[in-house]
Structures are given as C-alpha cells and as structure tokens.
Length: 216
Length: 326
Image (cartoon, rainbow over all chains, first blue to last red):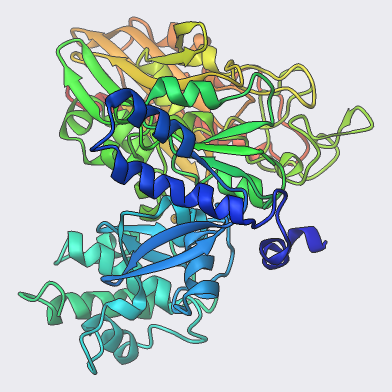
C-alpha cells in the first residue's frame, strides 16, 4: 500500500540518491545551454547530449508562476501540482483524483487550461503558469470569484479553485459564451456536491461583469 | 510513481538513441495524460522517460492539396482549432471534440490518442493487457459493462483511441521512425490483438516513435463521427462510429464504416459498407446499415446494451455525413 503513497515515494531516497554528483549533473544542463553560444557546434552538441538526461535524483527546476520565478530542487517524477503544493506553498490548486480527470488541480499554462497533476514540474519549465492565487488584483477578488459567491457556485468548495481557473481559461478565449458553451467549457471539471447550475450562472454573470476588461 | 531519469531531446535521432529495445525500460512522454496515470498506478515503471515535445519536426498540422499532415505531438486542441480539419474532415473534428475536457484537449496529443493504453480496469489494476489470472481472463465472468462486443480470441478490452475510427475511415496512415529507418502503416494496421498477457496492443517496437499521421484529401468525401458517452462531460466513449462516403449522384459509390470501443482493435464494418453501396442515404438505409454493422457481435453478460448503442451510432453518423458537404 505504502508504495502507492506518492508523498512517501518523493521523500524516500531515490535510486542513485540525491547526491552532489546529481546536483552538478543538473547544473550542467544550464551551463551547457549558456555555453553553447561560445562553443563550436560539435562541442555544443556533445555538451547538450551529456546534459540531456537528468535525474532520477533531485534536479534544479525553475518555474514561472503568477509572474514570479521560483527555483527548486525536485526529482523529475514530481508533478507541477506537487511542486506548487509541497515545495512552494502555493496550495490553491487541489490534489483530488491525481489522475487528470476531476479538474481540481486546474491551472493555466501559456493561456491554456491544464491539469497540473498530470504535468511533470520539469516539463512545465519555460511556461507562464497561472494559479488561482494569481488571478485577482491586489485586495480585490476577481469578478469570477465574486460571481461564484453571488450564485452559490460552491458547497464544500474543494473543486472551486479548479472551476474558477477553468472558467477563466474559457472567458479568456471566449469572453461572451452561451450557456451551452459554458457547460462544454467546464466539461473537464467535476463537483461532487453538484453545484454545476450555480457555477454556470456564475460564469455567465462574470462574463457580463468583465465585458471590456479581460482580466479585471 | 517510481523515480526515473528524464530526457528532453531536441532531435528525433537523439530521441531514438535513448529508447530501449526492451519494453518497460523507457517510455515516451508527449501530453502525459495517459502515461503519468499509468506510472502513478505502477502499470508502467520506466527507468527513463523521454519527452518528445521539444522535437520541432514532430509538431504542427499542415494542409496540402494531397491531404493533411498531423505531427504526432500536435495537440487535440490544435486539431479542433484547425479550419482545414473542420471543413474537410468534420469526422476528425467531431471525434476530437468528443474528448470533452478542454484540459485534456490542450495537453493530449494526436499521437498519444492513438498510442494510449486501454482503459480496461483489469489491465489498470495490474492483471495484464488480457486481464488474466492463472492464464484465464477475468473479464467474461467479471465486470464487463464497458468491454468488447467484438472480442478477439482472449482479448476483451476495447481500443481506447477517440480518433482511430475516423482516421481509418478516411484512409489515414501513420509514419514510424526506428533505429533502422522509417516505415509506414495504415492506421488499422497499427492496432493488433496482443498474443500474451505481457504483449502490446500496438504494432510498434519499443525503440520506435510514431512521428506523424497523414490523411488523404477528403474532397468529395462526406464524413462524420458519432460518439456515445455515459456522461456529457469528460469520459471515454461507450461506442463511436465514423463513416466516410463517396457519392455518385444521389447514391453511395463507396462507404467506409468503422466502429470504435467495441473490440480490442477498431472494427471495420465490411457488411455495412457493402450494404450501403448503390443506396441513397435515407433514414431507413442508415438504420439498416447500423444493423448490418453489428451482425456477428458477441456481447458479454454485462454489455449487450452496447450493441444497440453501436447500431444507433452508425445510423446517426451516416445521417450526419449525408448532411455534410463533400
């Protein structure tokens, strides 16, 4: 059973270990990329090939989340969601099914909604990632958040951050959706309390409130 | 999931050099929507994971006079956003929209849709691709409501691809790169019935990469996909029917009818195709074709309902195609 507890896995020393050598190997990726400009083409290729395989121990990972760059050391098997929740204290996105089905972990990467539980952190580097923490202006809730409150768009609230992010992804692409488009646009998110009707109303209300201000 | 070494090659050659000639050693990562789940369940425990999204030549969708070239790492979202796909290949557009989660469409790739492993819950619980215990399949006497109605030998799982039926009906091919060069397969040849509980359901070697999908021009071909799901939202299909019809005047010159999620490989409904030839696409003819397509179905004790769903899917796909230009 404990084998299926990823949290334990992640903390357990990996095969090959988190060693000084592993760390330097990881650093080699960055220095290889920087160095390629001044190396001959053949040497650059060799440097890249040498640095192309990383892990299984912890490696340096750089994530751009809500406009801020975070540098952490995690194993390649750590997902974007777990990197945020367990290493960066960015806990708005929730870990529910952890299998790319329920949508509670929804984030936006380069303008597209994604399941952060099903993306490796190491694979999310170089992307502009937005989480629920990053959508509101200072001291003012995002119109979507307000609309969720106004329309009873949540009961237990655990799926809500994912729904808000999925809705934001939808409205960024289609600022004036129809009811059916809202329904289809939220097809990747589940709410076991069954607040779908309130959620859809909230998204339509937010769309009206946001007219002319894409990201208020 | 088990720890692994991660590689991020930028060329196909580099990626091919990182694969192993043994299954289970290395896995190819594209969208990750299936692979990460398989790894979390310890169904796949690769020592190395090779991300192929950094290989530029594997991406993109291009329309030429000869047809459509879809890079293996093009996402389902790119496919649904393509105007060329929507106008000339509505069956592909409809099939991709059937993957009804925007998140999965943004992440999942066309190559990944074809190469994803079956959803059979015995397989996903570690009983192997044929779902066997002590050499005997657990499916016929077990929970089989989503399983095959056209089983083949001991294989009761269903092929999970949403796009395969449409691609087969449209006559598409896949290109495959390996250590000894490139080869091509018709999409229907990509799927095979596994010979043992440890074998694979794809005609790919462990050191090969599916690089692109080539769909011939569908000008003058009426095509459509009709999918039945348990939920309106994200779910795999219960059954899918894809059709591609060439007309001569008001009657059918030739028809392709392909069923998905009814057998371990997509099922080409030859009897329905022959029955349609020379007929007009009326409601009665479409209903009759649906019946023909399901001749010979062998449902299990819990999935006879899928026979009727598939009949209706064929009928509705044909009537949708009849409306389409082409």
